[in-house]
Image 1: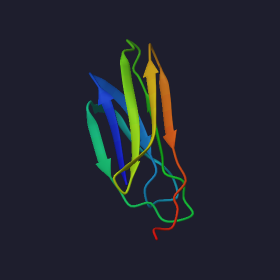
Image 2: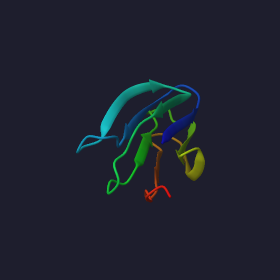
Image 3: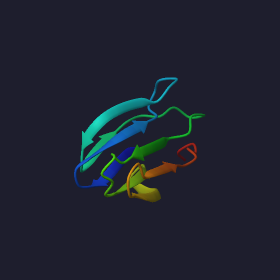
Length: 90
């Protein structure tokens, strides 16, 4: 699955991969992209938080190349979260 954050500047990004807790990237340069494996039973989730000076950024979640969810954050400390259920591949 692939997490993508589009925008300009930086954002704090937290995403779920194989671990029990989320992984946080402080001041990630945008645009940002990460492909990970998420085990069945875990919910793939990405959250972005904009810096003090604000801006706009959009997170996108794709599972097996298919768009699953998109959300946009705007303004100072704007926040957006994308998550989706993983289904067994048939």
